[in-house]
Image (cartoon, rainbow, N blue to C red; front, side, top):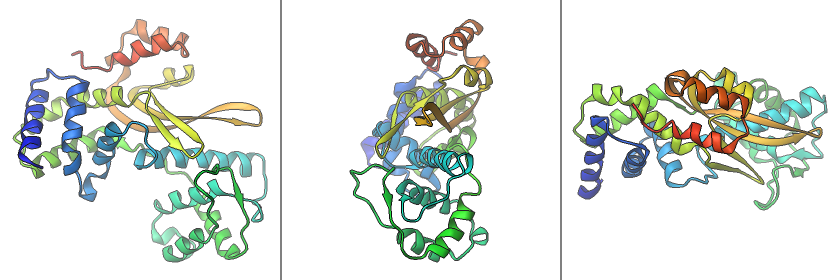
Length: 294
C-alpha cells in the first residue's frame, strides 16, 4: 500500500472509530484495503472488497456459494423428487460444475477415491462453449464407474454455511489493519461492528451474481415467510427458477450479522414489510434503515 492509500485508509478508520460514518465510508475503506488483502487468510474479506468494486460478479466465494445451492436444488428436484436416472448419454453440464464446487469442501478421508483421481474424472467430462447454457448436456464415454462413485458421495449433502459471518469478518479486518500498520483501537472497532456489517448489507442488497445464463440477486428478504423467520440482519442470494411449471426461489445465506432485525427496524415497518413483501418502495425504505442510524 502506497503512502496516499495508507493515509486515506487511516482517515477512514479514524472516522469509523468516531461512530459518525455511513455506507460510503465503509465502501471507500473496502476499496482502499482491497489490494492489501492478498494472503489466503483474508479470502473472505477480499471477496467483499472485490464485490464492492465489481457489483455484477461472475466469480468468487459468494457466486460459488449461491451456485452450489442452486445446482444442488436442481439435483434434488430432478434425481430425488422426480426420481430420474442420471443419463451419461445426456449428462447435464451443471452437474459437472456442482461436483467441482462440492469437491473443494470435502476432506480427503471422506472421498471414495483419491482427490487427484476425482479431479481427473471430473475434468474428463467434456466442456461446452461458454456461450451455451449450463443446462446443456454432454455425452460421457469414459471413467463412468469412478464418476458414479463420485456422484454418490458428493451429492449426499450440501454445505450451506454463510460466506460472511460477522465475528470472523471483523476479526479479519482487525488483523489486516495490524498487518498494514494502521493505528486503531481494537475494542472501538468491535463496538462499531454492527454498524459496519449493516453498511455492508445495505451495499450488497440488490446486487447481481451471474450464473451462466441465469442470475442471482442479493436481497434482505423476498417472501413473507422469510421476513417472519428472519431474526438477524442477513443477505441472501436468490435465484428464481421454473420447475415443473412452478416458479421457485432458491435462497442461500451469503452474509449473516449479529444484529437482531427487531433492534434495527420499527415494528410498524416490519409489519408493513410482512404484509407487502413485493412492494418495491416499501422494500427500499426497509433497506435504507440499514444505514447507520444509532
